[in-house]
Amino acid sequence: MLATDLALALDPVRLSERAGLAPDAWQRDVLRSQDRQTILLCSRQAGKSTVSAVLAVHEAVYRAASLILVLSPSLRQSQELFRKVLDVYRSLDHSVPASAETKLTLELDNGSRIVSLPGKEATIRGYSGVTLLIEDEASRVPDALYLAIRPMLAVSAGRIVLLSTPFGKRGHFYQTWTGDDPDWQRVKVPGTDVPRIPAAWLAAERARVGDWWFSQEYLCQFVDDQSQLIGSEAIAAAADARIRPLWMSGGWEGIDDADHAGDAGDSGHPVGAGEAGGDDGGLGRRIGPWPE
Ligand SMILES: Nc1ncnc2c1ncn2[C@@H]1O[C@H](COP(=O)(O)OP(=O)(O)OP(=O)(O)O)[C@@H](O)[C@H]1O
Ligand SMILES: [Mg+2]
Image 1 (cartoon, protein in one colour):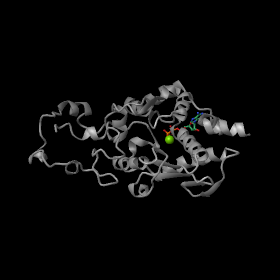
Image 2 (image 1 turned 90 degrees about the vertical axis):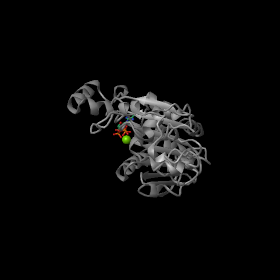
Image 3 (image 1 turned 180 degrees about the horizontal axis):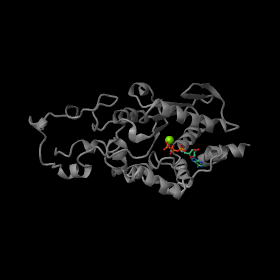
């Protein structure tokens, strides 16, 4: 019994198997990863939410007094994901008992908490010392929220995991995936690599929904919004770093970041001000290519 528990404690893959889920190869990688920052670019139905639930439960059960935040874009998605968390937790016979349970929170006797939250900034404020932060459907979570949650990892040196299908060439998920920050573990899982999605089904679905939608939902491609008149590549190619923006006509001196960023994070700092625990996931570099 003790040996089994030790094996489960050391290896989240064993916990997943105990919960009745033999993880796919990429799920095993994520569960065993020691990286502090992981981004998963996945097909629909790849098993993102499932692996998130296993990670959350493993952290809560085997690391006393841990705080796990699981973020989704909407309340419905938070509830859905929390249901998966409870399924995994309840499937463990010898887990730490629960001390409290609400619709979106599970508290354990060892002092750990799993909190599932919808992506609204107001609901996020107030948490600190987060040991594991999971952002499900991250491409649809607003950037302001992402910047508000990152500092919660600063003191705890917690882990962050972003998981999503793509959603246009914009936002922190796209920028983190395409950025060159080496401190991110990047994992891509197209539908063609998911053993539970038959190739014939994928071919039929492509014919049904069309190439544009299919490439976004199943092939992990960041595609421009179909209603966008000018493509992202054309806009990027037209940008000229030598031209000073009109709103900077007063000169460079004395202008700090707060003057030229519209989107504020938790601390009131703008996007790109380099906050968020000293690592803005590459967002800071995107605000302006202008010279010092
Ligand atoms: N390793 C696995 N073994 C067996 N079934 C799995 C595994 N991983 C996920 N599944 C199952 O695959 C289905 C999809 O899983 P999940 O909801 O986690 O995927 P998702 O990527 O979050 O999907 P969506 O894009 O719709 O949010 C679920 O029925 C889940 O139980
Ligand atoms: Mg999901």
